[in-house]
Length: 240
Image (tube, rainbow, N blue to C red; front, side):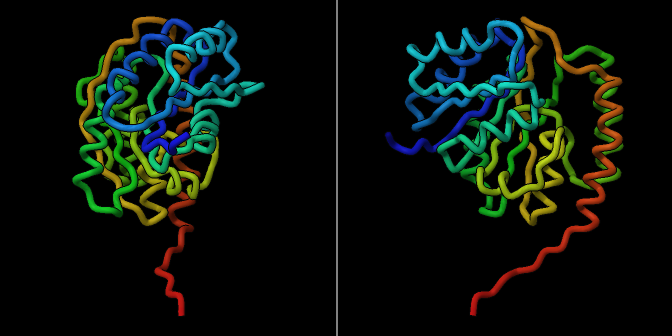
């Protein structure tokens, strides 16, 4: 089997009604453009998400399905998928269908035009289709994060991203790290850029997060990431 040029990693938890439409959209966006694989990571769903994924493999040979035997959260699911991926570059999507797979080729075009030191292309939801309270909470969270981390990124919570696999796996791992990828990539010495993308309303299932839950976890995580940045040391290396 040839090594794919791109691995699309999708973490899911209780998204049985969103799986089939999203897999079909990913295939429509990428088939004929490049060799790719789709790596779904089921985070021990309590509905029949896993069974739906298994049933799709016959029609979608690019699909691989991984299963957590116990629930570990989105960051761990993303990392599981990236570690299992066979391509040198990774695209991630949220499993709720709000990210548009048709934006993946646009991220790839941005990569083709970018300098080699750009290792992360982060989606930027310029027209968010969430509730008013969720948009308000995200605006404040982004302002606080930008002030503390100075990562020059307008939207770190967008699930659609394109990044180099090796650069990602070199980052420090912790729960909720997926929300801080621009700051962590910059800490590692790489450049990141934000790309405007489409955002859609959720049409099935329910959100797995609350505004209060995000805020309580976010405060602790922000302090931790700020500490990591302050303690970072980098230098060029010469072999003699």
